[in-house]
Length: 217
Image (cartoon, rainbow, N blue to C red; front, side, top):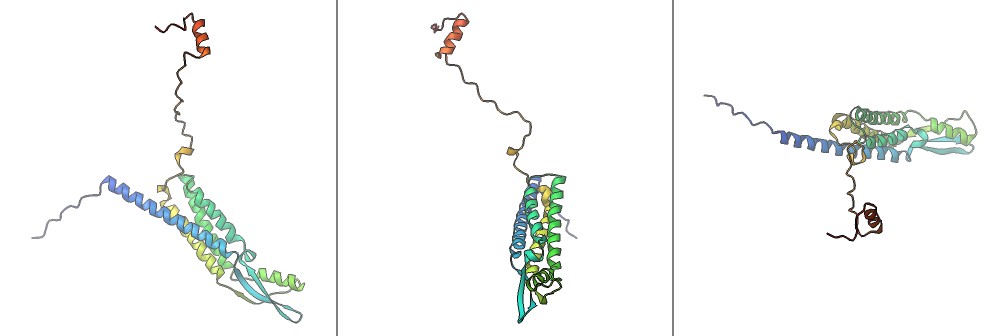
């Protein structure tokens, strides 16, 4: 005889809520960590050497270099926007949070594409060669690219992943504290301070009412 399957107890509502809360916390931590790290990487690599070459001058060749901000400023700009979006995702709810999360993902994708595109040209060094030699038609020779554009692209990939996590799990994340929002609910009024019958103005008020302020009965 085959054993009769024993029905397994279903997870209680409290357990399901606890699981959802843990998932939300983990996804939130992952998005913050990846987004912050990705933006930091992109911003830091902007100051590193991305391209190298040389310009022909009288007596030899002059070495030239260009850092990330000189090659393209797009990854830096998108990283700054990504940081703003990462903060703004907690200040909005509903469809607004979806839009901000999508912006974060798009900024990561754009920064990555711009970083990769920087490895295929040498316009920044050509401009430096023209300035150095005084010949507007001068072009850089021996153009090479370092690994920094690829590091920037890796940081942009982290921003993209952070945006995708926000799109997937952001609806479960907490929003800005309600202490700073006006919900229209009535506020507690200050308690009225009982009047002191010994104060001069209270004595005069009692006389105006025809009362004897010295009567303690």
